[in-house]
Length: 304
Ligand SMILES: [Zn+2]
Ligand SMILES: [Zn+2]
Image (tube, rainbow, N blue to C red; front, side, top):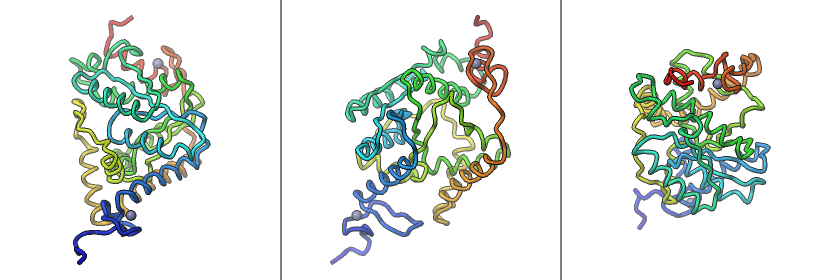
């Protein structure tokens, strides 16, 4: 006799592990894995990929799942991958996640390149924010972007894939709307030959799917939380969107697509402000002095 409470995969007769509320289908572990990898493959097939693609690899759940998924479909792509990790220099947090990242790369046989804040900026994140009331996450975000870019350049990598998923996009869409700052919608969208192109193969994959994918492959580790992580607006927006998604399946996807379409349509109408060359470091930026140099000089006014 069949247990009525035991959900069965809609595509085969195996027990289900995932319910896609929007499509109203259940998936077993094998079909969930296939579904995630198919979505990544469809995304990557649309892109003219260079011979080497860098995967921004923090060692956390999302980037580990992405690296695994791309490795498993690599024979259907005309490129190879390398993992790029930024060590921000965060005591009692980063050492452990970097060790996890190194271990994963050696298991998957993926070349792993690491760059340290200390080496490129002369200071760790801990040193830069100690005794300062500036927001560590903001500083970290700006410096990490530059460090990743330097690492990519050092290895002639023109395309960087990040582990952002559909939920991240939906949250960003709502946060941009709340902030009321139209420029934020366009941030990072300007194509510049100077910067590596950023791609997001999990753009259409939900956080739940990514998490399950990582769990099914035993990639989910109990790693420490970043001590600087603040549960500010994003946390509230995240909870709100989960509630919408539960009551109105598809909300997350619609919010993520809405942002994408706004960027796409408005991007064709408005021209992004041209990049200026930073007088201090020579990198392109939005002002006379770029954000990175502003941070480094503000935090260390006595630096020469
Ligand atoms: Zn199945
Ligand atoms: Zn600069």
